[in-house]
Length: 211
Image (tube, rainbow, N blue to C red):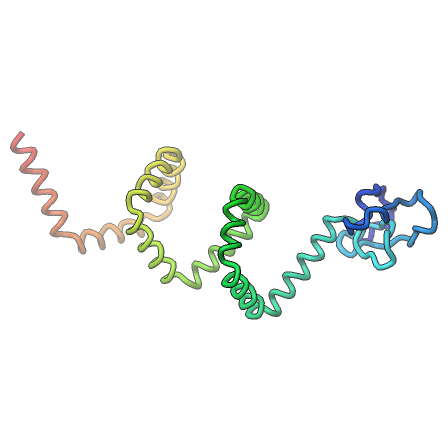
């Protein structure tokens, strides 16, 4: 439903063009600046226009409208967009890397903010990509773990220490809900590693007997 109640807009929120600050006004200023009112194309609020072509009421709505247009263009011209971006990166590789190093914290903060605001969206995207590229991802992870074994083990130990109760509760829940699956996995492991299991058992037996 369209909200027909006029909103109270300040001088700083009316103009969407930062280089024309002298054109900012509100409804109380001279009538020669009055372009009437308009229903915002994004939030459906009625606002006082600062220009006869104005369609949105604020910077936030303008940003949302631009983002929607960019998403639509990307969807319709995905290959063209990727090619253009790749070409730009190849031609400006050093410049991009230098800019990233200078603003590393800024980029990291922006990524964290975007992730916090769109956690479910990012998770769904990761799941979709993983399902479509399962073998590729598994190979990449195995290669990374082989090259960074000590780093990965240290990170795993740190995570387990910090989340021991959470991990144990999750494991207990899984064991309770999937007893048949766990038993089948244990049988399969025992069949595939029977000799190794027996060797370890004999070693433990002789070590205990020597004591």
